[in-house]
Image (cartoon, rainbow, N blue to C red):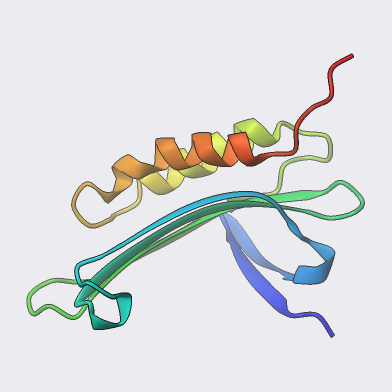
Length: 132
């Protein structure tokens, strides 16, 4: 049986999918930590934007941000956003929208500045469109 995943959507209830039925067709991510190794760090931050597509053409575009800290006086942050574009809808627009929405979420320092680059990287990772 395939693994299930719950994806948070913006301004609507989350959805649960079977990952085997909804493969990732494009994504972009970044991470940062303050130690030489992730496991030795006191702070780490992760950014992710992805597009999953069902065989019937439906898509889910979603983004996740997490800043975790164990430093005294500092707090952790997290945010999740997502959209279900209409079948045949504009996936590029949905990627830009999700990244814009999550960049406006509360975050640590200037972490929101990475979202425009991640949006561009995710768009570039989409399957190529064949031209005649």
